[in-house]
Length: 328
Ligand code: TRP
Image (cartoon, rainbow, N blue to C red; front, side, top):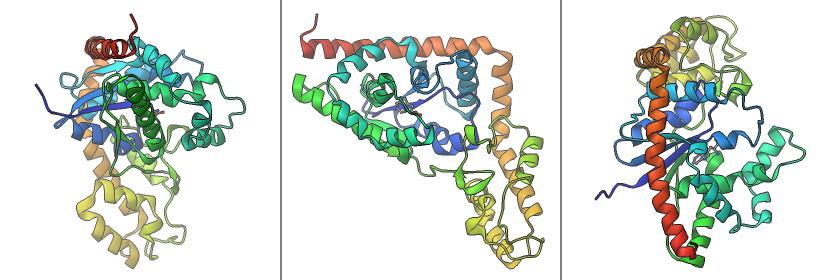
């Protein structure tokens, strides 16, 4: 009997992960493995909300899972599985879709942001309902905590409402999951402090980048436009490179800040130092990635095993659901 709480964390299979994904999610997942029961979901059905071209989904899944493994997610502790391979997700999604109104889904600020950012004119039925699928993802494992960034909090709220509605209507089956906010959720991209690092933004450092790539990318990073010459005083508070120092080079960040402000430290040197630190942070990942790159079958074996374990938990939950609802 374990008293550990259950965490359900999920990510769309977007291919190779970047530092923003690491800082905003993965690093936290690795830390949480010690104290919780973790389920790591690959949200392959969620991809369909914005992209019906699935030709690259298998490769994207493998690339992402290799990054998970390289970063230290332990598949023996925590199952990793694809949503599409555990059919109970779709079953619970259908039941949940009756427990929420379309008006409630249309009010969801996260969906509104997506409509704006992706210029979506006509939303599919499934896209509007994707927070309902997410609620099924979480509650199928009776997830109590969901590690997310701020932007996903409205989705977790919808999961809570659905859990509450189900429990009131049919009897207590589900916990009300809570968001577990990631401490350092937002990392700026290489093109400016105000832009989030994102694959579509083309402003990323990938976890799989070589030390040379990292040096090269940082050389082009945008810094304080007023610091033109090496000894001009700079403003670290508006410099994304300084954010990276705070995150990846905390012990030296203060000295670097002082050097930048006084003009003693130039951008070239500052960037070189952070490139070295980031490369060093990623060194332990490199070895593990090389192993899995050479043994892709093991990645599929890990998924197959994770999917079996996820399925067995999902079957239990669905038995509770069917019993509560007098189905079957
Ligand atoms: N909605 C998340 C995203 O778009 C992915 C996701 C799907 C998820 N199911 C989840 C996240 C369950 C946390 C829990 O990135």
